[in-house]
Image 1 (tube, rainbow, N blue to C red):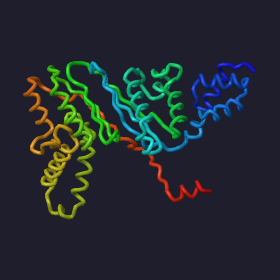
Image 2 (image 1 turned 90 degrees about the vertical axis):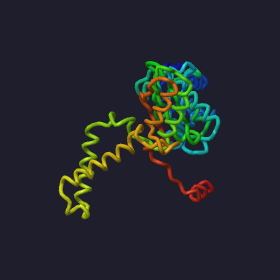
Image 3 (image 1 turned 45 degrees about the vertical axis):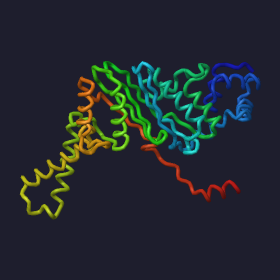
Image 4 (image 1 turned 135 degrees about the vertical axis):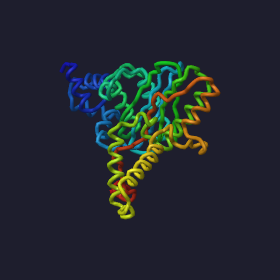
Length: 310
């Protein structure tokens, strides 16, 4: 039976294996799909298809910054277990994904998966992922990435915490691209990793967010028996005070600086700006935490052993 492109595509969709390996398997089995699947399974390549349904909520975050500091990317790649996340083979693969993202023009994950895998052009990104699943032996997933391209003067700086549990990427704007910006970027990125601010500054807080928080604080205040005898103007002042306090918690530049509690982050930035002789501002930042928002796989180890023995 002739090995057609349609047959290769069908085998790819059945097994998740790369195009070239599917073509070879079909050629060796004279175009017989069932035998081709068996052959790929024998070679350990089609194992990824069975693993695709498993929960992958562990893994790691990694970053890539180009040598010329014009492009930076941050990616999250998930695995099933923390054990695999610490494996050097997996970590090397994630580094390649971060580098791939730096050269990507993809607007979403589907487009990213469809791109040619730079480390081996015979595969797409999705096919290369399937290869890694077969080699590593767990379900893996490239969950997300973000890419920054520096528009003007300044620095792109990254920070990885806990071996890849949390990653931060930040863009600083400054006319003087002094080395002090790198240390500043690392310190502010550490702040973001630790305290996870929602916004860079108060100017970025949406009006509807403030309106909703005001509504919640108003209801809380009026439901508090301690405020039953207080007039409305006093309650309003209380709400304003509480909102101000919340803004200092959720806005990065208003937070107390973690390395020096006597300073806010903004005052720390201003102190470095004096040293470099030019104003410094935070253009944008992104924080990824491995597995945030994903369903976690919970297993009883004793039950798992019992199942294995059975």
